[in-house]
Image 1 (tube, rainbow, N blue to C red):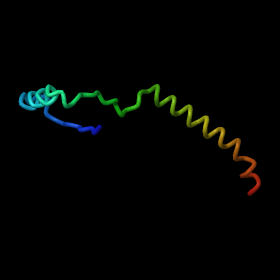
Image 2: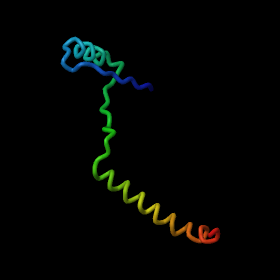
Image 3: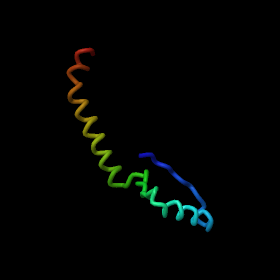
Image 4: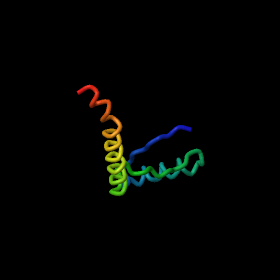
Length: 69
């Protein structure tokens, strides 16, 4: 299945009619697109995962780093 993204002037009656006619054929479906802006909860979850990964990598890499110092 392919995806087509349309941009149109929502104030144009002609554009709205043409879009409605296109959707009415049943050949196309309309899907809502998830916002690309992360929510504050997603940002905090990412920050926690990042910090945990950095903390773990420091602990696991310290013997290797010490060997070369």
